[in-house]
Figure: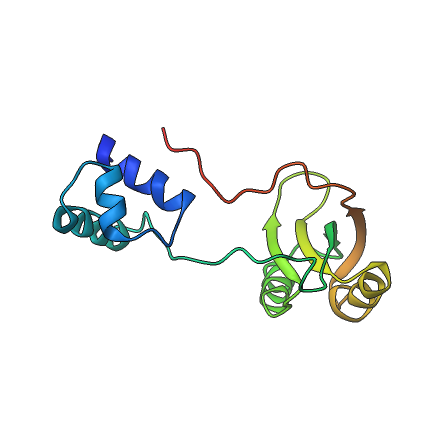
Length: 151
């Protein structure tokens, strides 16, 4: 169970993962040593999984964001395992989730443009085991966040 100070530390780190320990300590009203120890414990207990930089997809020439519903031709453990292991190796795939409902996986990917997407779909995603896909090209990103609600 997290106390109020640990929740505040997590919240501050979500806002700025590069914040100095001294600044973080000041924001959560702890000494720097006590703050550093709390952050270490949050890492060890799995609350903090790592740190990343948010990059600009337009400047990196991967501005087309697509969501793809994937239906597998069979729902056997071997087909699931094959799809999971292959999709993990595709750099354009940002996220892949097995879902319940009318399809098997929801894939989030970034590519340069629609021509690049067609090539990506045909040469990479449409592999053995995939029966059909439905693609949704994003016209506008209304909200894009990695911040989790901390209650």
